[in-house]
Length: 97
Image (cartoon, rainbow, N blue to C red):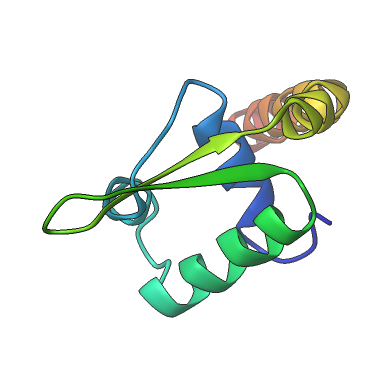
């Protein structure tokens, strides 16, 4: 469900509220439109995100976390904390040498 390079980061960005695809792309340099669309579709299929298309021109689409997506994000929080502590240790070791 969260394989690949971008899905955990997309979960993190969507924690703070609904986002439009263009905003997600701007916040993640290196993420192509094709890969973003594919990841969001897979996450929607897995029940992690909700896609809402507003009937206006130009078409306005927003993605938000579902309750299931929020639960996954909360479950990943300790792993994220561990990763931040690891990066801090690596930075300390780098500056000590």
